Image (cartoon, rainbow, N blue to C red; front, side):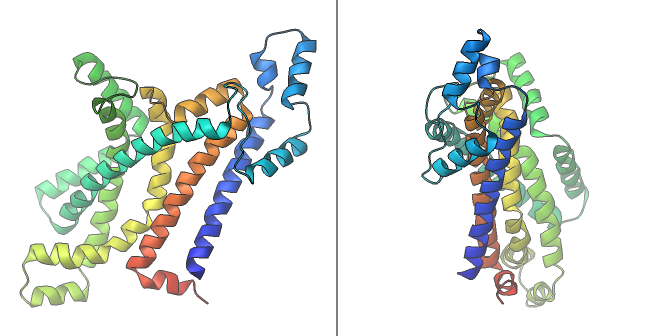
Length: 304
């Protein structure tokens, strides 16, 4: 319980710091929503800034916003004239759907891929390792642009928007392939180390088939380091999804954040940052719990 409380408190601090930092940076940028979006005479601009509360000191704006967030009220969007909570919830569901599908695809590809490259030698293993290194060097943005170019030339897949299953292919694989390559590297190194342990050697000495040694003994012992990094993977997945969503016109948090930044919609910027931080904190917390579950030494080391 102490382990879970510490991790939950750290997750809360992450969300709080990210959201407050996003609001601060949006406020520090020159201009504001009224000045940039409303091309009227100075008197009208001043009246609109007063109506929206943009003429108040930042400390007062931040205090009022922080008080409202305690009741899960993130304010109202200047651009859309709707509660930020509703807008963020609608777009966060689309981002979560895309990120979850990409994470599932990356896991189904990367884990078996890493088991093969970590437990075998030869030309095939070397080719697979080289391919994973190539995918690691290409960011999701470039992958999505390449896939969009191929789709536009061939007409095999829709190039933008959100609709049927075919619309998932490009953004999902653009996000999943670099993550799968990262999982392959982690899994390959981890299972290579686990197959060198005395317990694995004892399993071979008992005459167990090599495939059983790898999958039943080696893989189970190699899960800890892989699970521990899943929180970072979730964070990179969501940060990468913002760029992919903008390129593929996926109606998620990435597009909403872009619109909020262009309009200088400070509360909406903070709300999008809060949603991304919640996803990241939840991923890190889940990976910490999973790592502690597979390796009790993790939680015992933090228990005084």
